[in-house]
Image (cartoon, rainbow, N blue to C red):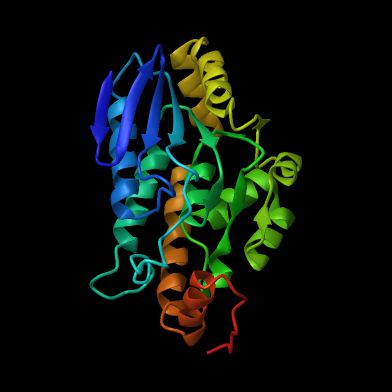
Length: 262
């Protein structure tokens, strides 16, 4: 099976389907990309031959988040007519409601919304150049994509608070220590190891796997949907501040922000 949903390509390998983001080199994140992922997940829910998904990406980064330097991310959090955050987060909830297990193969940066995509998966296979960051506070806004719910669920409240309050980057060793990474591979073997983990899951009885997953993730999509309401409201409020404008400039120029609490 080979199929396309926008910039998302699907390729079957036995009972495992590769779902590949195809916006190299950085796979910048927007409502269209997340909508295509949700469409692909919902389609694969109807395909019995697919038992496990491997979420992967072309290029240097799993997803470097929104493209603020190019300007396309500048209205992402706003409440004006050009904002697409509502649609983006609606598509995110659709991803969380899909039923097939997901293994993410995370190479390079998974930043902001890219971290949110990695956290939506059941497992994350990482390598020596993987970097995770929730850099929202450096942009002067609240975290989004349900990260304020999913990150503490995976790494614990204290680790999550430190990541979210500082916007710090988390490398592979630290990620493994806190449970953000589930398997440490190499850049060369990353996809093969992710496929091997997915194949191991796919060998089990698929109805039992999906039932067990539904139990373990019971209420997760509803909780993410509720959390997103708070996240989006705060993002829209903070997007009108001087600190947000300064944060975008600082991140684009790769410098520390000069924030004024205005």
